[in-house]
Length: 523
Image (tube, rainbow, N blue to C red):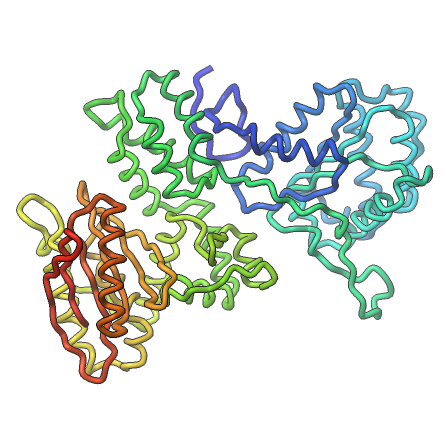
């Protein structure tokens, strides 16, 4: 069967090119073998369902285990009318899985299990079922977010928690391991288990082990997939180079890696003269196409920001204001942003990946323009290109300086001081005009630097944005920029300095520093 890159639903090894999952799988299997109850809580399109089915297949091969898998998404609302109604639904699903499972229960054994009426009955039947087999029962439940807002489901978790805590007692024998999969960390949910008037809240799943398996794919695991494709399709790929660049843009987010590869294979390669080689230019083009499209992953990303004003403003401070924010796992906003895949820890708080950074920047820029808070550029791209088609960035910065000088006396100075980075990004967007993109790399220093890596067709440009903090800081900033240029193998850089002194200089300077050429503009 001919394979392809999968970006929807469960990945199947016989149908899809897949990254090396052995490290992730080993970590999850270790939890199961040690009898842990845990939640694979990661953002959407992170491979949670694929992992559950891989776990199901592996456990089915092991004579010591009997895995049972369920999914409550899309079930009738009537099942949530009471805890007893949900218990009856769960019991029906449980019996069905016992019959389906390889080397599972016989029909005669199933007939000996009496029907239930209440949640307490279900607890007793689970103990009965566990005692009927020498196998270790492992319960896998996918898409638990679909049920987590319903109290009957949480009562079920509460009952399973009670049995887990008393599992050494004969009357509470229970599942060896339970694996839940969803976006939310179910163990943090809290609800009233006692009298509705009781002010105390308890988590129904606080027994869950913290899930610390790294679910992002590493470059060597991406190479595994590239080799599969290359050998099957007879396409030349510099595995190390392409995998490192894929990781740079995606930080190993499974959907984004597969999406970029799928676009190269299905949309870009067929249009090329040489259809038998992937290049970095192909990957750059794939990134540009991805950033222009709408998909459910981006819809979810933006929806999560739109639906939470505090999270939006917090992300705005991190990205636009270039604030250095420590990663604090006890912060509700940081936990929320991490759960949605927006944040990650990298020393301090960071946006999870370069693709998300760019998408969020685009969203915030357009939103502020639509609100009328900042003005977009009227100056479009062709007047800022050189004869060879490259971007004339010196002219871009001079024009922005002129733009700011004209606006400085007309607009609220406090607004300009707060939004100057976003104003520049809004100014730059129509100039790039689909021919390039600008990735932001926030540097956490006292200067609040924001480095922008602009790719325009085949050219790369490094622009550093910073606030004037005096000559000493300026020299330090030149050292940092020169080192950054060296890191990217670029000989020339650009420096845009916001001078918030009472009398700004409005000047420009061509600087030779550490064998690099830096064009600096003050606004």
